Length: 275
Image 1 (cartoon, rainbow, N blue to C red):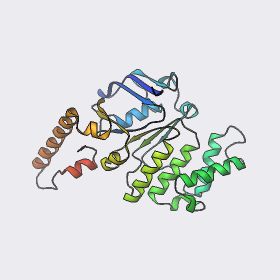
Image 2: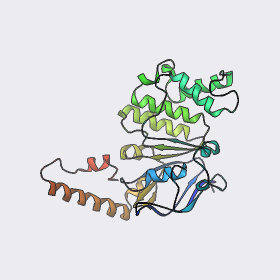
Image 3: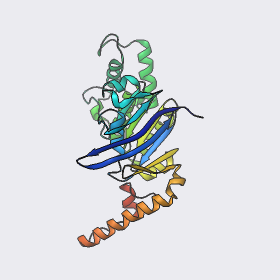
Image 4: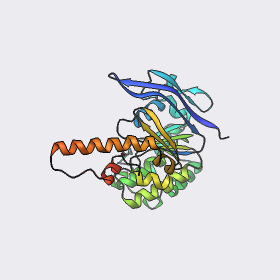
C-alpha cells in the first residue's frame, strides 16, 4: 500500500456565512500526480490556501508527511516542511535573466551564505539540469520579462523545484498557454511527478483527460467523485450535477436575450463539462 503524504480530515471553512469546504476528507499518496477539478466556487483554490497556510479552517486537520498538522503552522514555515505552491499568474523576477532567477531561488533555499552568495559547482549543475528539464536551456541569458507566458510558467516551476518540495501545488498551470505549451507542460508535470507528489487544479478538461492519472471532483465543498477520468466522467452524480448546471446556464442565457448559446465546449472551458 502506498504511503500517504497528506491527509485532510473533516476540513471545514466558511466565509461570510457561506461554507466553502464542508467537512472535507481528502488524501494524497506519496509520488502521485493528482488533478482537482470542479466549477468555480467548488472549493479548489481554498483547499490549496488551507494546505499552504494562507487560510485557516474553522475546524479540521491537515496532516502532512507523517503527522504534522499544517493548520497549526505559519505560512512561511510550510516551505521548509517541503510544500511548494504556484499560483495561476507567473511570479518571476522580470529584470533578471532566466539563469539569475534560478540563482535567486537557490539563495532562498540555502541557509548558508545568504541570498546572493556565489554559485558553487553543485548549484551550477542543478541550474543546468533544471533549465533542461523545464525546456529553457536555449533561454538561459534572456531576461525573464521577455519570455512568453508559457516560458514564464516553466521558469517559475523551475524556481519552485529549488525548494526541493515533497508536495508541489499548481493552480491552473496551463491557463493562457498555446496548445504546444500545454502539451509540453503536461510532459513536464509527468517528469517532475516522478520525484514528488504533484497536485494540479485545472479547468482545461482536454488537458486533464490527456495527463491526469487520478482526478478528484469537488462540488459545493465536498468530493463528488474520485478516480481516473473515465470513472469520474461516467459517474451519475457528476453527470447530474453538471447537467443541472448546464440547464441553469441555458435558462439564464435565454432570459437575458439573444447571445452566444451555451455549448459543451464553452462549459468545458469553464470547467463545467466532463464529457
